[in-house]
Amino acid sequence: MKKHFTGPAIFLDRSDINTDEIIPAKYLTEVTKDALKPYILEDLKLEGFDPNGATLKNAKVVITRANFGCGSSREHAPWVFEVNDIHTIIAESYARIFRQNMFNGGMLAIELPKEEIEKLFTLKPQGDVEIAVDLDKQIITAAAGQECIGIPFELSPFDKALVAAGGWVDFADARY
Amino acid sequence: MGKTIAEKIFAAHLRDEPFPGAKVLSLDRVLCHEITTPVAIADLQARGKDRVFDRSKIKAVIDHVTPSKDSKTALQAKMLRDWARHHEITDFFDVGHNGVCHAIFPEKGYIRPGFTVIMGDSHTCTHGAFGAFAAGVGTTDLEVGILKGVCAFREPATIRINLTGTLSPKVYAKDVILFVIGQLGVNGATDRVIEFRGPVIEAMSMESRMTLCNMAIEAGGTSGICLPDMTTVDYLWPFISGEFASREAALADYQQWWSDDDAVYEKTLDFDISTLEPMVTFGFKPDCVKPVREMAGAPVDQIYIGTCTNGRIEDLREAAAILKGKTISANVRGIVSPATPKIFQQAMQEGIIDIFMSAGFCVTNPTCGACLGMSNGVLAEGEVCASTSNRNFNGRMGKGGMVHLMSPATAAATAITGVLTDPRSL
Image 1 (cartoon, each protein chain N blue to C red):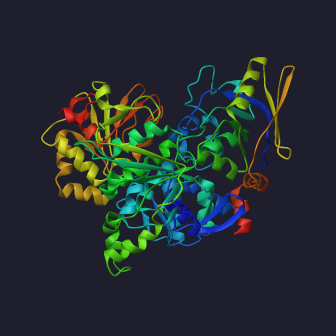
Image 2: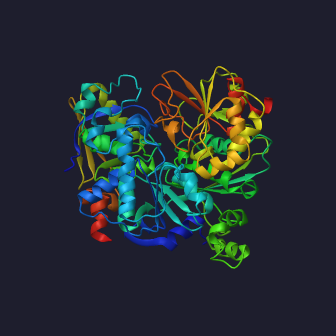
Image 3: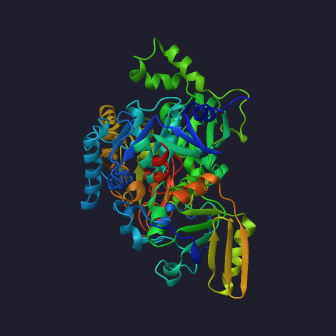
């Protein structure tokens, strides 16, 4: 599936959002990615957040705080975002396995310093926030109402290669 | 400049560095279970690449939901079973022979010092107890591991934790690791290896070291790791006696992996654990830790003893020592899951199963079951479990349920009273 890194954002304003909140273990009995689709963030309890709401339904990008995706190694967590058409996550930091799983699937887990994440959160009151990620220039453009900000980000050459290859299986298969 | 044990293992296994900092390691073990492997199998099949890099290095077990509870879990088990048969993966453990992955694979002697180990399971860090670099990975890493025998990592820095002093009675490895996670925080070791050192570790059994390393991931750690010593050799001896002339020779060989005296650590933390008390978690993160004493009296609905953290024979012995001749509170239900058939049998022979059953515990077959709310003890909304497992996330054991993590001794004491209880107070 072709990945995209642009679109409306949803804000999840808490650190340490774990994989059980992203996709509860009881759904790990599914053997296809598509079957996970309805259960995205089902157990996440967060003020103003509705797992069945329009904001999540329309979102293409998640913006969140530190240590996102901690806990289980389940790739079902990135997959449930993938099948819900969310291919970009922007956070202050990630759990290692979750982050690797995102890039292994050809998706983006962008890490930004706390101040830059804060800047993105300050856009939220102005209405819908639209994110565009320029992978070549390594700049995130965030637009809300009349405001538009650009935030540069870092991406290792390896992570970039994984995204370009469409994931680790294709990369590794071609190389080893 | 010297190297840490993790750096030595990385150097010995480096297969490729496609970009600076991206280390592709060759793998000694690719471990599989029925939850995360079937999707990898299906993808390999869809790509027309249904192959395995080395069937002797791949080990597989059905452990998370076993025997299967419904059609979906039966399909997962079948996919793993059919695949293992097709590829002649002889180290495959099915109903009757299966146990919790991080208990059964070490028990079979599959993990050796200096090994690289991956599995599609976050608690793979357990195997670092043997002086291996062992990391939980996702299904894609697992898939590439199965196909190519490699996995990519950013080389992790190491946090060294020196543990000195002597553990007080009724204080165990579980209390130590809960304390350490409380100190580090849930992401205090992200992208890091945690190297456990000091006289406390040297005095610990392999079972205790596994309990310790098992929870490295709860601080974000890529792998926990202990230096292999004579305790490691003794544990492995039935499996390695053909490889070495003597135990001393085995130890001498394994010492090649020891961190050098001048190895560089990102940081070193020293803890004297002589005054450490039995610990318990509160809330929904494993770094929310307090002495049990401060939480004493909080009611619980269920006691769960087992899992890859604390389902080994030593754990069952600790709990049984407290339960012997007692019955559990009428307000709670007790569940114990010996982690492997061997442990189950040993517990029967030692009279431990009898103690649990006489106390009013339900004894289940070896499985991950309730730990992640999949079977054999799922909580109802609003219920609380005193558990020897490793994760207390909101809803982990069932939607709306809450989990307190603790040692088997504390869980047993809590079973008797029906409220959180310091095992020293009984």
